[in-house]
Length: 287
Ligand SMILES: Cc1ncc(C[n+]2csc(CCOP(=O)(O)OP(=O)(O)O)c2C)c(N)n1
Ligand SMILES: [Mg+2]
Image (cartoon, rainbow, N blue to C red; front, side, top):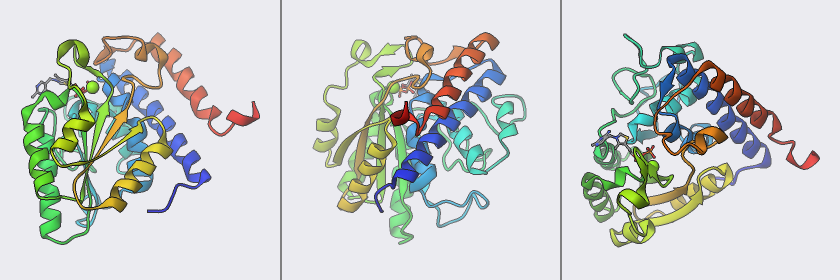
């Protein structure tokens, strides 16, 4: 995988900023939703869908595609925004989020949404699904890669560690695991609820190859994926330092930002902030 050019770095940052804008429109049309944990994985989604994953939006079931399992399935709205911008379905469909008869339920559902590879929402289960898929890809010698996104609170589910132990002991080098290490879960800070202690040490002790990156820096994320895939040999875990609610200051600063109601006034304020962020990309040095 080649290094990101300056142009691609800018394009990915713009893609991430556009995902945030579509995500806010999507959640605001419903009036509430899982905003914090959706915003924290946007930059990762931009790198995966914008540069890394081998996909064909016109053929979502293409057998040779790389697969993405978003195990923290409550972040579905962010994934839908990315999928719409990639052309899997018209962006207008985002307005149907979580409404009767929609193809975009609040949590990811592979039977409903083009581009969603696994049904998730019961935390921990996506880890096992991803490991099963990665094993099948290896047995089938397809060369397809499997990407898994886990939440840091989600790691309190024992099922995650069963899956990781299996993946490492079978050296599933086609599997890359991301941990959205935003330090918060549904009800507050992990530290206050159940500390995971040193995550890198834990994953290493299970036999994984562990890297860490700034989860809001597209180049750092891309570099970590390059480094992981060049290393081969075993399952890769990339711990992403993230902020729950990233990109909208008021949301970042709200501790209870797991699921929030969004008034039209908030939406207007936040949209201005997101649009300014999009328009300032690439102009940083000329100011
Ligand atoms: C098995 C299971 N237990 C509890 C829940 C309820 N729940 C949904 S999201 C969430 C918090 C998850 O925290 P984290 O993985 O850190 O994701 P983030 O909120 O940071 O996006 C919980 C407890 C669930 N969906 N599944
Ligand atoms: Mg979290």
